[in-house]
Length: 128
Image 1 (tube, helix red, strand yellow):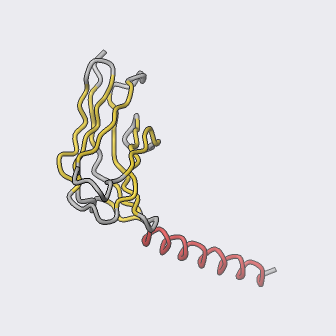
Image 2: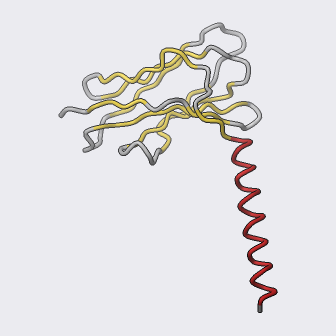
Image 3: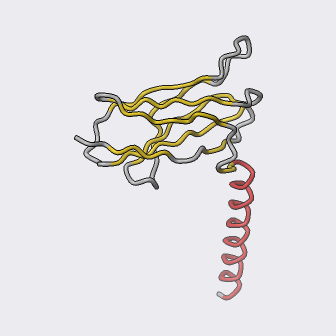
């Protein structure tokens, strides 16, 4: 019986270490090379705009929204820069359909090799 407990403990320990290492390889927060990331409210929607400074590895962006600033869900996908064009400006909008008084947005930049980074979190007050 002790033998199985030890094996379970070793397996759990190895699994946790592997998970942490794998996550560390795929996620690096707040290092995205953005400028002018803004979240602006208009009449019935929120405009999300940003500009990137490094076009080299951006494959696409996910715009994520949260009502509490902790649990985010993807609300839009935006394709990365077109190599044939020089435009570094990106944007999208999100409809306001929440009873929440505050909405939080962040960007997730996904590179061609599958690694991703998160932007800073922007908050907007919704006054109805």
